[in-house]
Length: 69
Image (cartoon, rainbow, N blue to C red; front, side):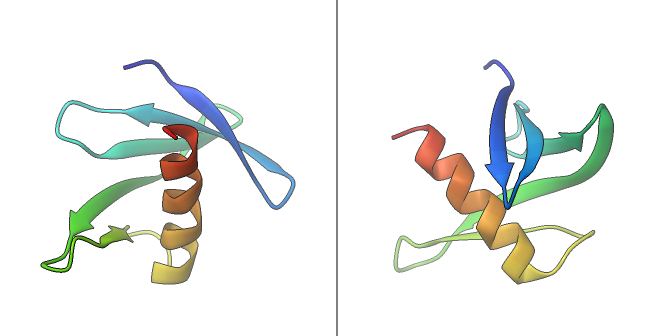
């Protein structure tokens, strides 16, 4: 899968899918975080990151999901 760009509140971020289903998020060529989607029993996707709040991870995750629509 190829990297793609998203825009989060005026900031351009590059999203690079990796083989394990996670996504590396970079800004200006520097890694910001790795996002991991977790599917709940109710089929909801919860986006998690060790480097940011759940709210921030969810915002970026929603933009990733929109990219694939």
